[in-house]
Image 1 (cartoon, one colour):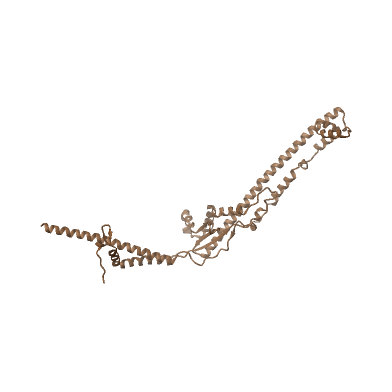
Image 2: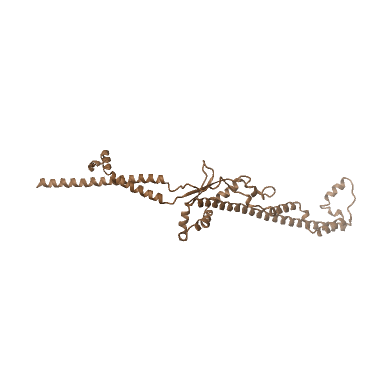
Length: 366
């Protein structure tokens, strides 16, 4: 049985005859089925010939207090440094995790060596753009507070290894950054202490020289009045007089005492024992330069949420979805072609009708 329809009934002016349209499409069902079959076949060939892509991922959370304890060995107490918090350490890690420098380093050290020589000699910018689909960093969301390192590769074992390798690379860099910052702070603080020690020693030396000048002047006065020993005065007057013996009445100590103190000050080998704050500063300096010894193996800047598992199910291509899309796209393409054919059939019919009408009018005129 053959189905026919009048193309002129399908589209007439701005009106659509739905029944005629359906009848016209049904008349071209084999065309629609053929287009659907071809597109679906192409989708199937692409899907089943494509290499499967596996996705390995690892979630990372902030470290615990015990994980960062090693970073604070040279901080707190009398060091003058504020101890690191979990947020301080984790901020360094997340910054390196998402940094362009870390991605570039992994691209150079791991991704490029995995390519064959022909691909490796191509455009580095294009290769790096392609690398962006291989390694991805997913930021936390409200439902998932962890950062995710996601690696997509055709080899599932390689995908898992690269995810772990990138985490290790970022961890090493973050630990190095924290220790370098601490070491720099220690160096700056040590320089400050050295400057303070130098100032205290210079001040002590200046104070000693000033004392010697005052003693020599008092000795001159004492020699002038012939006072060898301090006068014997008892009672409250003696107490009041003793308070002035280091001031304007210093000469009343007598030449013997003044001369002895001058000789002692001039013969002093070091002023350090007479500087009150010096020993505390020396202790801080010694603690900073001798106590900053940490082992990176006892530190952590993040906490992996489980181990990296080797994926066993590919995420691409999605065969069922590809076939469904092939059927839908094929059906839509076939229907579109059928509608175009109906349009052309209508135009050809209209031309034929106009031609017949013109011929009839010519005959009547003759």
